[in-house]
Length: 448
Image (tube, one colour):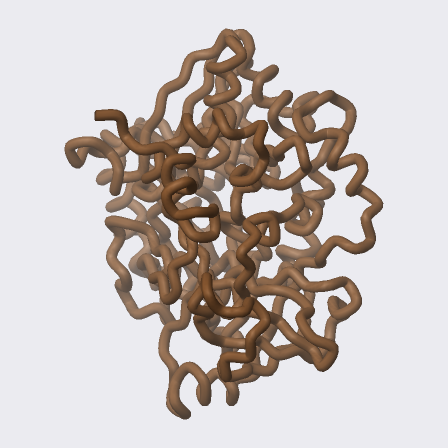
């Protein structure tokens, strides 16, 4: 029996939004990793004040792309600059549709002249593979799904451990017997740990210093234990799944925007190629913002802050649309909303400490003039003392200090007016820049 496709699911549901709308959907957190080790508050403080270890080995989907046409297919379906892409470097890959909507980003690392690995949420991987196979590019693919979808409970191909925080570099030097050679941001350098090969990717989260260590799974347990043991005098804290999902709110990265693939008639064959039970058919939409039109959920890479990554010096799918949008002053602006702590306690905690809050809901952001934007991710950030929300809002309300309200609730979806006042509580918020963290906002790109 043939497995149902994404298009089959849309047809049965009546529309893309009918397929994806799931009021009250549970927020995603990394699979396999424990929810908490020292408690989410202590784990968040660790990368702000000390040193933290994060395990990324199980929730990443990896696609290896190798062959004479590897660079060509990635460049023709991605907006990035491939003229300056060194072996050992990584980039945030930005694929877009012909209308200039993002498909969902990923982390693309160049491993050799004709070899790359694309990691993260698999929507970008699906996009590249489909077009490469359909159009006959001379490339081959190998995949390693996340642990929740890996057949037979097999081990991952690679381990990935992040060491982050003000004490990260000191701990890393202790483990490796010396500092990592000077490495640019989002570049990697090969190192060894007791003779075991490891790649050290210069990385940061929420503005903190650190590296991501990547290597063959056969060495995973040894490397993990080495960091744990050496980290004891530094107060190393392991980060669980709850806290792991929160630093993107500070660093300004919006995870898993809705792929702009559901409505274009030219992509019908692509939707028939995609499985219904993949990320494109299962990542839910919900929150107080509701529209029956899936295109109202699409986003431009400019709205996500990816304008500096777009390179018009080559021809690529969606180039004309992005070129036309480059001067569009009506595009939404990415901001951080600092939610009022008293309102957070009142609405989310009934007057008490609400505990851990994590939401990928699209909540309405309003001003007295009406709808101003929509939240994309919200999370408790204990060192800040409240909930922060990443939001896309009208540029007229994007100035830091602007007061807005967030409508916190779950619209029931089809059958109810999208603009109906359903009596949901309001939480006051103040607009701040995105990224919220100053170092992430000012230095990440400078150091790249």
